[in-house]
Image 1 (cartoon, rainbow, N blue to C red):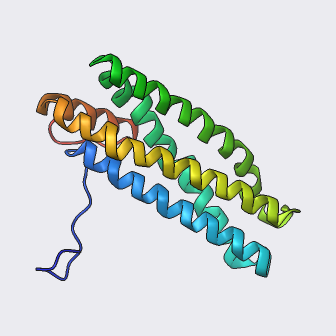
Image 2 (cartoon, rainbow, N blue to C red):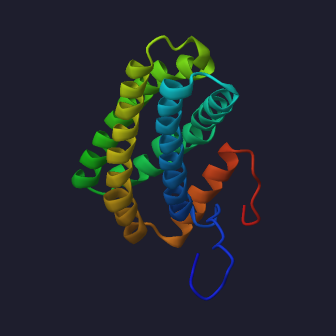
Amino acid sequence: MNQTTPFPESAPDFTDPLGLLRACHQRMLDHCERLLRLADHLQSKGADSEALQAAAAIYRYFTTSARHHHNDEEQDLFPRLARESLKLADLVHRLKQDHVELDALWQELEPLLLRPSHISDPSGFRDLCNRFDDAYRRHIRIENNELLEMARHIFSTAELKKLGASMAERRGVRIGYL
């Protein structure tokens, strides 16, 4: 929220695809925080209704919005940037490896979030949540500070429109400038 108005700033939309990717990164981090709180809650209070609701929301987010986000990067952002230079191609390669690691961690978390009342080792679940959170934080820090900053300087207005249009299409959203 800025200081001159009591209203929050509006979220970026598909007309600002790089801003939208950054905003999505923040939502990912917020859901990682929620995952860590869930792990603590399961250890102290068990799988009560609050835990079941949190697990369902985390599961829903990482199987829909986060998946779209990774596809935005893998199918649109990464290929466009990798063609720019060897340095960017190397960075894109590292980030794609991170996606593989994040997907592997998610494959371990996903069935546990679907049935949180069946988590037999809350401490082990907490460790897995910590690894997932750490991997996402490291990955997002690199994307925000390096990749998206470079993209901001490299992409033309036309390329940004194409990126935004592709992101919207992936979600079944029609935007006015198509």
